[in-house]
Each structure stands twice: as structure tokens, then as C-alpha cells.
Amino acid sequence: MKMIYIFVFFIFLSACSKDDCINNVLGKYSGSCFANPGTFQGDMTISQSPDGGSKLLILDNMLDNAGSTYNASFSSDCKTIDVPFQMISLSFGGSGTISGTYQLNGTSLTGNLNINVGGMVTICSYNLTKG
Figure (cartoon, rainbow, N blue to C red):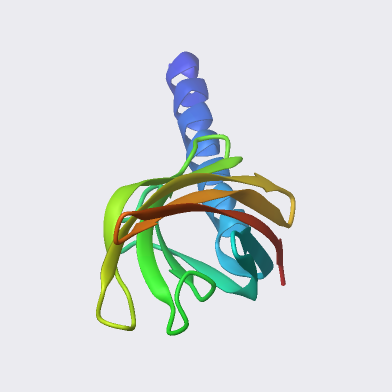
């Protein structure tokens, strides 16, 4: 019986650490995104998806003047955010596709987002700090 309690305790402990993990990921990050032809300043707000778990919604004000929202998920160690290939709508009425990976290190978020709009592909390199 004692083994069952120990087993349940470890499950509870791992569930709590996952909750703490997502709380460390969520929030508003500010900084810049460097892409050819220049550097864009702005904010990125990361929130949990209504689907829950490791799924995220990212509102990125550097990607488009009005802000673009896209889906992502974070790794079990809370050090990587994966942006799967997906289509996004842009404020000028167009659309594009994105994919990429961000790395988290404390309050720092860095990484690259591959952006394709109308056949023109660019990589935006992010350097953000949680505020």
C-alpha cells in the first residue's frame, strides 16, 4: 500500500511541475525581430490555448502591424516552443505561411520564424525579454 502512495505522490509532483512550467512560459515578451530588410520592434504575448496542455496561442505584433495570432506548443522541459507549419492572415488582406522554433532561457526568448508571403521567404530572428 505504501508503494501506491509513493507512486501517486510522484504523479502529483510531475503534474504540479508541468503547471509551474506553463506559468513560466506564459506572458508578454518585448524586443526585436531581425529580418531582411530590417529590424522590427514590438511585443509577443504568449497565452495558453483553450485546448490546454502544452498548446499555446501567440499574438505577435512584429509579424504584422495589426498583430498576427498563431498556434504553438512547448516542450516538456519548457525550454523550446515549436511553431508548426501553418497559414496566417495578414492585416492587408493577404496571407502567408510560418513555421519555426523559439528557445526559452529564464526570461529570454530567442529563435527563428520562417515566413513565406507570396512566394517571398524570409527568416525573422527574435530576441525578446519577458516583461
